[in-house]
Length: 153
Image (cartoon, rainbow, N blue to C red; front, top):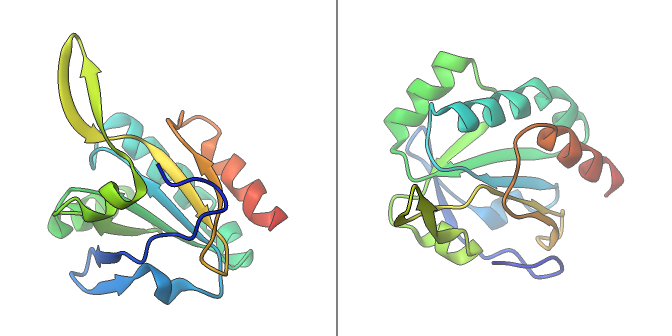
């Protein structure tokens, strides 16, 4: 997993409108890059709504929020519309972004092992350096904790 103090990988993000953006295109302002397993599941929905509820405060702090999963752009669009999300969602169809950040991990549920996205958040500062990492995120209170860190940058 990428660690605090390292430069964020120069990955390409496929956004929900199917356009592409390099992570480096966001330099000059903080970026919250959060990884989540799947659209429209209980924990992922709560997390996206929590970031949306604070979207105006993140914007006032100059920060951009980007949620990343392997779901296709069309599913992101439905997810965002259904829950009135005000954050950017990106697709990692080929797994390159999750691999680059080290969040594609072996999981274990009910004794069954499988590969999946670890819920994690990376705060990337305006210079492109990882300022803070939250591995294995617990959703409750997480967006608020991230906002406090953004304000402290």
